[in-house]
Each structure stands twice: as C-alpha cells, then as structure tokens.
Length: 378
Image (tube, rainbow, N blue to C red):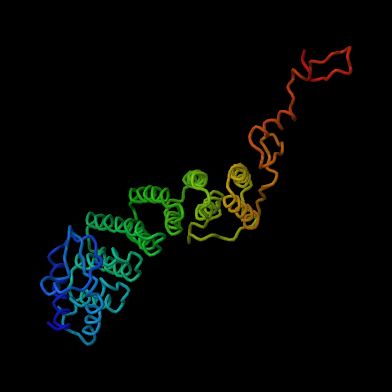
C-alpha cells in the first residue's frame, strides 16, 4: 500500500470514529514507533471515550491532508480533511473557515462542531481559534433556542472552561471565552452569577497565581457591584495573602479590591477612572487607610523577604495612585503609640505598658522616703 493510500485510509478511519462515538472526551497523539504490524490495523482507535492517533503517522497524514485541502470542493472530503488538520493543528484558521461555510450550508451539525473543537482543545487547551469558533457557533444558534436549552448549553460551556483553565495555567483564552458567555447569555439570571462567584472563588483558592482567573473574577464582581461584596472579597484576599505568601497576583487583586471599596471604579464602562483627592470620600479613605495600615503591619512583622518586597510595592502604589500614606516604618497602635514593625507582640505590649503605668503604681508612694522608687510596691 502506498503512502497516499495509507493516509487516505487513516483519514477515513478517523471520520468513521468521530461519527460513531458522539461522547468522545479527548484526543491525543500516542507515542508509537513505526512497525511492520501497522498494515494489519488502523493507527486510529478509541479507548474509554478517548481518541488516539499513533505518532508515526502524524507527519505523513498532516502533509497529505494539507495538500489535498488545496482546491478541494467536495463536501465529504472537506469534512474528512479538516477533521485531521484541526485535531493536529487547531490553530489553522483556514480549516475553521471551511467548517463555518459547511455549517452555514447545513452540512455539519452543531453537535459535530462542538465535539471537534472540544477534542482539539483537549490536546491544546489555549487555542484561540477553537474558542473563537465556539463563539461563532453559539452566536448562530443561541437566540433561536428556548430558555431551558440555552441554560443547558451555557452550563456545558462553563464546564468546558473549567477544564481548559485547569489544564493550562493562566489560560487567558479560556477565561475570555467564559467572560463572553456571561456577558452575552447570563442577562437576567442571578443564580448563574452567584454560581460564578463561588466557582471562581473556589478556583482561586487552589490557583493563587492565575492572573487570568483573577481578572475574570474581577469582571464578575463588577457585574454584581456590591460594596459589602467587595469588602468581603478584601478579607478573602487578605486571608489568601497570609496563607500563600509571595504571590504577586494576589497583591494586584488586592489593589482592585481597595479601589472598589473606595468607590473609585466606574460602573458604566468597568474601567478605573483617574484618582485625585477631590474624588475621594474622607470616611472611606480613613477606613481604608486604617485597614491597610493593620494589614501592612501584620505582613511586615511576619512576612518573608519576597512577601515584604511585595508589601512595600503595595505601599508605594497606595501613596502614588491614591495619595494615601501608609507609614510602613513606624505604624501606630490604636492609642497612637509607635512601635517597630520588626518587634514581636510582647515587645509592643511592653512599650504600651511603659507609656501607660497603672493607677495602683502611680498612687503607691512612700511619703517619708524620697529616695525610694515611686513605682515600687512593698
């Protein structure tokens, strides 16, 4: 059997398996050396809803499919060729465009396209073209669906985003697709927004350095736009900073929360507006200053070197952006007594006691012995 005939057989076998197994979960290339036994069985197979292609045939099959795609106008052949090309290289935009044309001609179903893009993402979860294709598909169909089916599709897509965000750290395209879903299809569904708040919170507790995940959570928080929620988020991020020290993403998220608590976020276009002294509410500023002062004190007393460096950057940000001065070198207790941030709690208490002697030691004095210590008690 020649190379072209072998590649054509593999392309057809792959198409047959995709049609037969509608519940495939993933696709991957299986490391397998070329052997004499390859002519006796197909290098494409399904094991427990996982589709595999042996590695020895990847290059010849991809080359064959790329060459055959040029000038091809046969519908069935286009479907077969784009299946192979997109599973092996989901960044190939021209192949997705062929699929769009076939979909508009009703040669492909929504289920087929969602399955193919999901399999492509299972191997390369940060592929922007695959997410873009899913956006386009939902834009074609969601308006025509009843509410129940729309919610079912939305739930399935959110689960896909969870999987892709877990597979690839800081998967911007997965979180951007999730933001698109919430923006376009969650209007008037407060339960879904509430669920997204909890799901993003659970995700961040185990992915404390995921900048893209935190950016998505900020978007959901702004959708709710509740000051008590922002205050609770500030406490949540405080706990994470103490529990997982040294993660810069947590500090950046904290700055967002501080701005929100100060009321310096525009709700119209969800952007930060310019900050000046005239825009700030003194009551909120005082409260924020006190809270941040306590937080900074705790971090500088107990944090490691990198944690202290991140804290110092936060102090500079508060000063330069919000014109709020946090005295990192000499923070004060509630009674105004200064203390060294490097001193432990016992030393702080000792300083307070020295500044405030008890009434008993002040009144117990010996009238007839002026040389005796006034604070000594017999």
